[in-house]
Image 1 (spheres, rainbow over the protein chains, first blue to last red):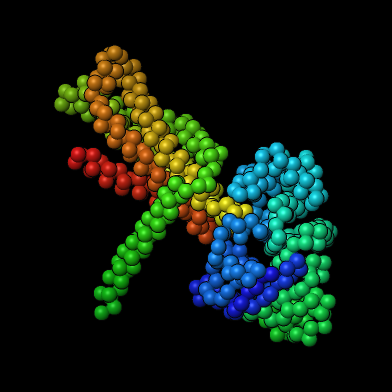
Image 2 (cartoon, rainbow over the protein chains, first blue to last red):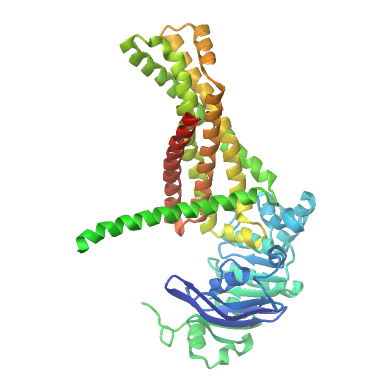
Length: 248
Length: 261
């Protein structure tokens, strides 16, 4: 279980998180929604330690994430980045097997390649793509490679940062289905950031809306449409009028 | 009073900024050196960096050195003729290349070629979240990106300086023997007899220092880039500028030290 308690983070005078409190139960899929620049990615990066919160506590299974062995902590995570964040200088299979070729999870090269190709198949790519470089793939394929890399070491927790941004609706649907299937079959805890409502409905068990640096609403995805929260209602319906100020 | 205080405040801010910059670079250098000794190590990345910094810089270093050596020979011959000292061309080319021009020109060429490449590559990795991805894959970016490159700078730039010294001297030899009427054997004998071991050592020590500066600053500016394409461009430009200036400053300091011992 991941817990954020009263997490604050500012960049200079820009107070991004103003007391985020959120619980993500084990083996569930939490989707965090909110407008651009509301701090969704910052919250996610705070959990991973990529950004240090100013105040507040983040725990994983009751233990402070800033304490203990950092490698062991990170070995429990997989992450799909918004732009893929694939390493340009490495072929696709080495991107997928990156963690399996180094550090505590290191395996022989042949075995790492086999696992990488199996994970690529799992996300709908063939072994022909394995030896290509990321720049030779389309945006959708790069997302799939990123997804394969995120699940390569079979992590307990997977983070997805804007998994469908920049993809056409059909490819977005494919990625959403893959995420849902993988999370279910691996029994992983998932935390996804998106503002794509189709993704929310496809991926989420629970939804949290971040607005004004705090969690505005959280609950099961089934309750989202009847929340009665004016901020969430405006976000779901995509109206320009409402409590969320829209800049024209 | 404001017209008196404003310039003083500007000078103070500039001094504080320079001190803060030096402090940040010193901390970054300390962190890098501390990672030299602590596993994990990435031999494949180190080998790649050795090739990139050393082997692939040979053409530009060789061409720079041969033309500089040739031009130096012409200048010394022409200048020496004013007081009947044309015969000192081999000695002055040798000492000029080994003590000064070899290390400085190789250092500046490495700053142009390697510092820019390192800064642009790491800065691009930073803005495309590849550095964050490394962290989430349990890989320390300093160990994986900075240590191999700085180690390659420390090892390969002295080698490049040694090669540059020899090629520069050969440039002077070719011009002197083909255009200025020097005897081949006498030229080489004079060159070899004149150079001392301390000249060679100072050249190689300068090479190691310049290699460290060039690669470290490439990594530093890459890791601390601003956002977007403009950030990458700014980081690359700043890295090359800072490396070139610091190499010249370090050259003065090292030359002063070698003169005093």
